[in-house]
Image (cartoon, rainbow, N blue to C red; front, side, top):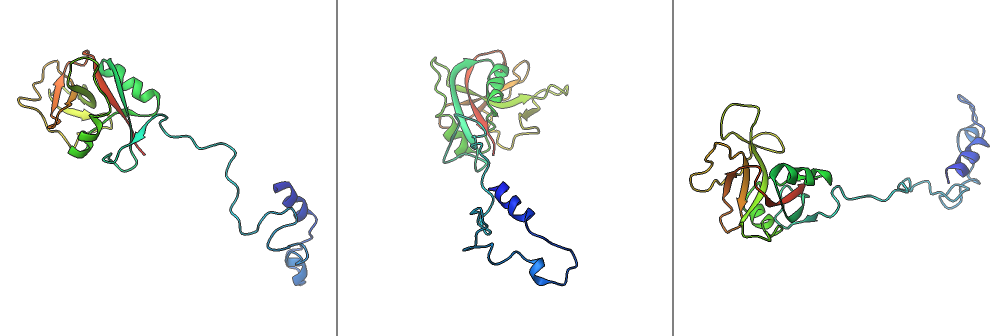
Length: 190
């Protein structure tokens, strides 16, 4: 289509500053029913590229209570240590989930079912290793998390530098040792 239009235009003569109006416009004989001689519409947008659009994070799903709007999720029921879980999420374009509110918490805990007996899921919060302060948790997005419903006597600090969310109706957060294995949820932001 582009070559046909280019060939058509190459055959037209145009002299800037010409006083002949016929030379400044394409001949009405060249346009038939709003299309150029090669059939391209003058009003149509350019065609989309030949490459199909791919999802930002393949295999992720939208949740009714996901946050922010457009976020997608993937539950992983294989137990991994926190860092390995994070790397698994990053490998397909996401990161460990950062829970932004109670409704999102209720939705994401349904995605990863522990084949063992642990009622906890890794989330994207970790004690800030760049400071000497204990219990200064930051999200994988950077900065403090807005939603931190800590469980009783939590966070308790020490070597418990990674965070779990309870798979129950309260969705409490618990700090825990990062080298423990847990199931997890990945999140892909829009």
